Length: 169
Image (tube, rainbow, N blue to C red; front, top):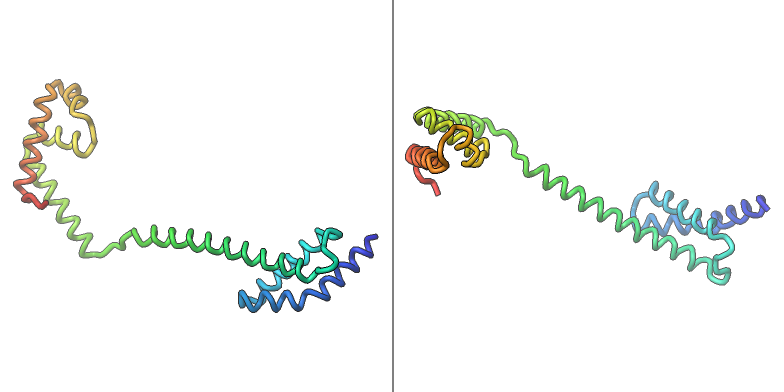
């Protein structure tokens, strides 16, 4: 029985291998991949064994080949979409332009200088609120102040920074 199966596989391979390789090569233009797909078709045909329509084995074999190509195309489109998404993500990261780095350092120095001009309590409240993202109620409780006083310090600091840098909206 084993030798009959081997003989059937050999006969199937001998009969369909050249046509399948040509079929795949014309469509994908990659000989190595065409060989892999041919192997996959022959494997699937031999796994089906007796369920093949004996009157039209060519149609069955080439239907499997067409289905493999469709599956390959779907997988490739998913890969391409994933690669495009990765590429878009990578393109969003800007390169470090020395001029931009210098400009950013200068801007930071200017902001820090403007913050140093504020009274210490106002500066502390502003930093806690804007940079540390604390709620005004938390700041008030922490410093023993009223929420209204914290609001006034935040407004005072914001107005000072606006005066230093102008309203650039």
